[in-house]
Length: 119
Image (cartoon, helix red, strand yellow):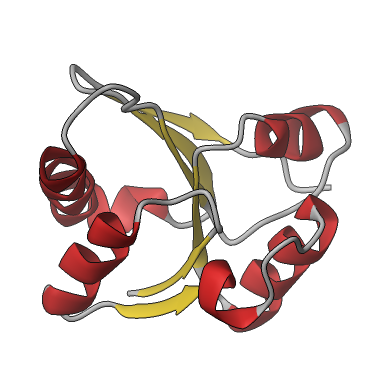
């Protein structure tokens, strides 16, 4: 799966996903400080799942109607970085087909998948 990791994603998560064979583009390695609108645009152009911990992307998708290829919002604050990588890798592995075109929230206890409106 092609993934665009926002700059707020821990490097250990990116490393784990690369180790699992995913094609990862990482904003921190590309152009840190990129505006959210540009990040979501790149993800859509690349056909990549956007991996972020920034809740503002929910605003862009659900209130402003921005269409994405899929967003995975990570809510794992306070957990060890290696555990975060394992949780995200497991969520992607278990819900691979459901992530595309949807807005997904991953916590330590759940994976919630919400359909995006196509405008």
